[in-house]
Figure 1 (cartoon, rainbow, N blue to C red):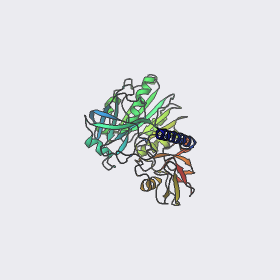
Figure 2 (figure 1 turned 135 degrees about the horizontal axis):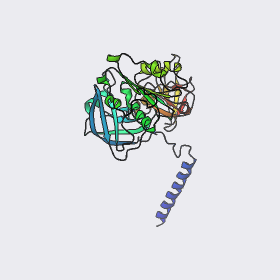
Figure 3 (figure 1 turned 90 degrees about the vertical axis):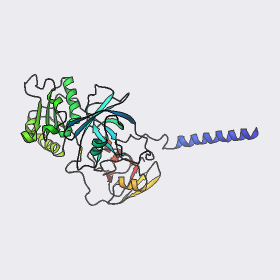
Figure 4 (figure 1 turned 180 degrees about the horizontal axis):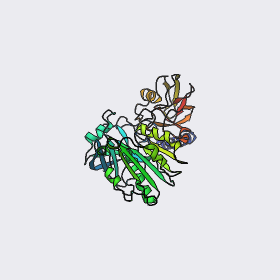
Length: 374
């Protein structure tokens, strides 16, 4: 009996000591990290310090050949989170690769998400895997939805879409129509056969503006009509309209260059599927620096010609998620606890840059080093 009492007392003292230690520790409770937006890692494992992503299994209820080289997938599930125009999901492919796709269905219809993807012959393989392996009846894993391209309130909208860039724009058009906000849409593509959702767009009720009688939807098939007249589209936009543009990089670059010549107060909002034509890049003067991983207690050496992402995966955390490695998808965003960052991404806002970085492209400024919450 005496032995039992001694053991119990020792256990109680240990628990109390542990509570005191936990309470005093600056890492307890551990600050929550945001869920990874997408990436690729070893299946069944996750990186230290990062919580498992909020994932769910959905059934591909329908697959449709939406246009030449474009398939539409309708994914069904229970208690799906609500979403707003501009949102995307992360689709986990059978290989473990994760790709981001805009939701192009109707937010007012619960119980399903709809995405569409174009086959990119010379891409990195994600679109080919969708086209060849995902069919009706197959279960897939998704994360999200998340939204980095939200439709902000505005007095009027001008929507500019090129090719598969119509996917985030289409729900915006529906919302503007329901809200009774004036809008115009210019939709361009290589040919009518290659343009997804063309029939729905041309069938939108009230394609003519009630006040002016002008058409609100302009479809430009380049093999029939030549290139779209972006300058004319911007010139015809109402003053102070919000301009939402998605499509190939040259399209968005051209819109950005023409915007100052348009009506007063136009604001441009874009979403890219690839990096801009002139991404932030190394000046050739990069120097080595150290990255301290606060949670794991390790220090990683980053060489002058190596990214933080690569150094961390090679030396400490092999399962860190990543995707584009070019600073535009947001997959590898990590919190910064200390150090000055040389931001080279094309995604983060100023507020996000205050305490995080994209480790695939950004570095420490100089050789001062960084402390990451990993």
